[in-house]
Image 1 (cartoon, rainbow, N blue to C red):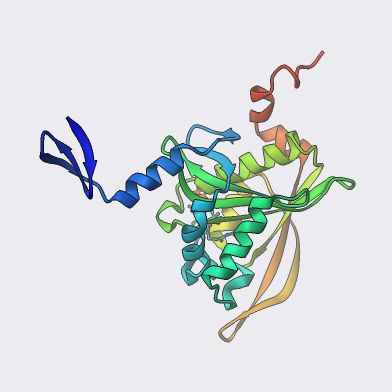
Image 2 (image 1 turned 90 degrees about the vertical axis):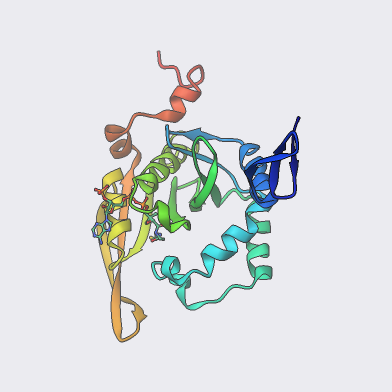
Length: 228
Ligand SMILES: CC(C)(COP(=O)(O)OP(=O)(O)OC[C@H]1O[C@@H](n2cnc3c(N)ncnc32)[C@H](O)[C@@H]1OP(=O)(O)O)[C@@H](O)C(=O)NCCC(=O)NCCS
């Protein structure tokens, strides 16, 4: 008989696998989360309550937040809890997806469409992969691609833009790979140590996006997206 006891899976009283109970709980939570849109490697799904401690660690990790404007702040668990509660309540203007590594649905970051303007049909993209070991493996580009497909295909946006700090070469390359184009520069936007850095503006239109990428959302919703 197999059962879970403390940190061990027992088979006829003999420990066969040593799993901390927390991992087992984490595994259950991650598997139970719905996926809204996905590639082979990456799915986007909703945030859930259980994400709180992970988010709290990411937002206080200076190696991660050096690339964001909120670098200068320190976040208590209470502050992060309020942020998550807000995200969980949802809003018409901001959609935040959990980036889930498939097939385990491991939560490695978030990608969002912010300041969504449904009249003028634009939004601003933001992304963070908090689990640093997953940087540089193409997952950021896949998550951005999915968020854009959602923005253009589901929300019917016409243009999505983003702001990125000049020294964030990895992010800039990631955005260029997906099809974002450089549109502008605001000089001396942030001060880090003794050095001033510019802020770059990039954007992509719906037509430009679907010229490069197949629509995943129209495959999922093939009856309602049927042409002719
Ligand atoms: C930015 C971020 C989302 C990108 O995700 P990612 O999965 O690491 O990105 P990808 O692997 O899809 O693409 C990164 C590209 O940058 C390249 N790259 C990495 N470091 C680089 C550097 N110093 N200079 C130039 N290119 C670089 C990688 O080689 C890769 O390009 P390639 O696929 O042509 O080889 C992720 O790294 C992250 O969350 N960083 C911290 C937070 C952040 O910067 N958020 C964005 C704020 S605007």
